[in-house]
Each structure stands twice: as C-alpha cells, then as structure tokens.
Image (cartoon, rainbow, N blue to C red; front, side):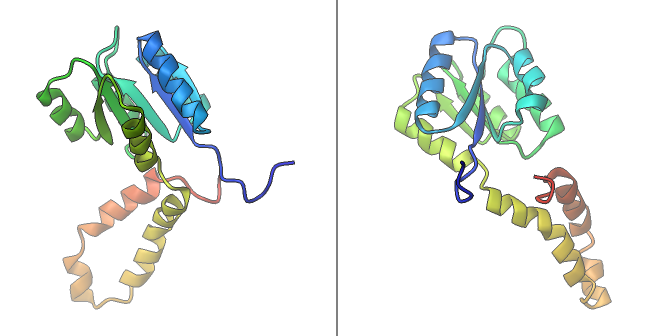
Length: 176
C-alpha cells in the first residue's frame, strides 16, 4: 500500500536520436527515481506528450527530421510553462542564445557531466506546491485589486491580461 506522504514521481520525457546518449540519460534519471520515457525523435515525443504528460522535457538540439528548436516551439505552443532542457554536442553560442530566447530552461553541452545534469534537472522541474500557489494567484489578486482605489486600478490595467493568461495556462490544482 502506498504511503500518503510519498512525493509524486516526476515524469521526464527524453528526446535524442543517439541511442547511447538516450540510454545513459535514462539510466541516470531512473537511478534518481524519476519516471522516464526515452524517445528517438521529436515526432515520437509530440505523439507521446498527451499520454505521458511530463513535467520536464530534455531534448537534443540537432536531430533527424524535426530539430530541438522546432520541438521547443511546438511544446510551448501547447504549454508555455513546460520546462525544456536542450542538449547539444555541436552547438554554437548563437544556438544557445536563440534557445534561451525561445524559453528553454537550460542549455547543456555534450558530453554531459552527471552532477551538473542532475542539478539542472532538479532546478528545472516545477515544484507542485509553487504551481498550485501560482494557479490561485489570479483569484486572490483580483479580489485584492477590487479593494484598491480606482486610480490605482487604472494604472495597473496591464497586469490583468497577464493574470488571465496565467489562470488559463496553469493547471487547476483541484483537477489533479
């Protein structure tokens, strides 16, 4: 029987066309008690995404077919807050800068150092408690704003769309 205090298993989707790298990263992550789904292409990753629902995606930059940048764009079209870590053995500085501008959580070069990799994973995975607080933020913020003087509310008009976006993107903690 599972303990109620047991932390939920964090799901990680690993995408790389190099099977050796894929197997190594999977081994490291499984040893750290993560639930891992390794796939060999971006297309496979996109097909698996609705079923597996990972909390983090790790992808190679250069792959056959769809590359890591295209995968990042597709992932963030559906879920802009999904953390993505990008790996590359042949990337240049402009590639890393472009990836960071597109919203990648971290950019690591191959060969990957195990300790640095695992540290980056733990920093990139969302904390469920923080996400549930963020999901409640629009509701509490709106109730507080209603009490503000009208002039102050008018000056903060630009925050409203941001709060609405957050309330739509973040998962409802009740549904989990």
